[in-house]
Image 1 (cartoon, each protein chain N blue to C red):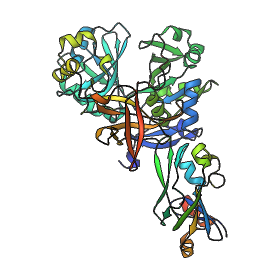
Image 2 (cartoon, rainbow over the protein chains, first blue to last red):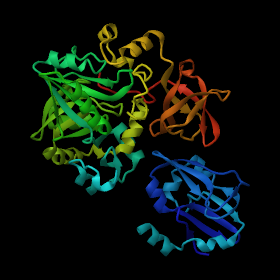
Image 3 (cartoon, rainbow over the protein chains, first blue to last red):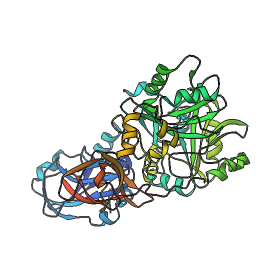
Image 4 (cartoon, rainbow over the protein chains, first blue to last red):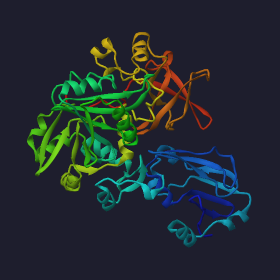
Length: 122
Length: 370
């Protein structure tokens, strides 16, 4: 399944019933240098549109909102050691968490890459 | 304020050309960072020289019949010793309200018969009106809106300026002089807002772009935005008006007693002297302190400070990440009993109580020319 994007600038890459979630390259450019990432505990239930993680740049703290509802099954521990990974690889190694999706229908409301790029440009 | 009504400094086109990210600040469209980013700009300033556009700040001259008359008038508004300034000497002080609260902080320089003053951008209209309201016959306030202001800060700043005018080397900390930089006449002071050695350079707005480019042409110099200016001053333990000091804080609470010279402490005669002198004698109820969170999470302005039992003892007024320190840092006010260095405190961040310690300021040692 191709990567999907939310209006809150998260990306979702689904394989089976597991969604890998991160912030988009556009989002990291807007944030600037990331100095701290607060990840949820494994096992936490997240709700689409609800707070799931915190990402802090030198200037400010921002929320990562869960783009899908489900249970956190893994977090990217590497971000605690090296938060700048978010800047270097927002849509790759800088992923935040993996969530076991409880409502696959929610994916329908997310954008594909072309729609997200258009959304960002507008 | 809507964006169409934002002011631009004479260096606006330079910022755009450099690819700066522009944000509204104090009514101006200002560069918060350039493409290098806040961390790189911060680190460059600590190791080389950063060039800042601070033309949004308010410059003015107070012109009287002689310096003593002008200085005596200014001493009715600020608690610093102005009369005792040597020619070309600069001093930091605060405009105080009658209750001892701080209306703004400012830099003042003795220049012939006049006093050259730089105030914060966000307060300049209020400050100038405040000074104007108190002006006696014979002293005039002249706004210098036709001047730009650049700051060149960092260990290489002096060598960069010396290439243009070798006399820059001899300028003492908190003194000013006239330099000719490739033919551009500039009023230069050895001061700044980063904790580093450096200069603030006042030039006619028509010369600002040429001087900016002249300095940027030096391989030691890179442009630095307001984002790094904030992290640099925070590491240096310097106050930001409207955050660490405001109309509710006194200079004694803010730890600015060093800026009230002995004669003024003895004689008083400035606004709020009653409160200030009482706080000097008895100690203030609360104090501005440096704070180091023990974990990695930054604690931002507004964060509640508690003691180990969870009792509220104060609030963070500036907080973030210190690139040179390599971790989170903050300043805030705590009750005097908890203000000693190494006191263990807690910070309430997103509902969690995180351990932190009171530390002495600055976080990063000052490297002023002494």
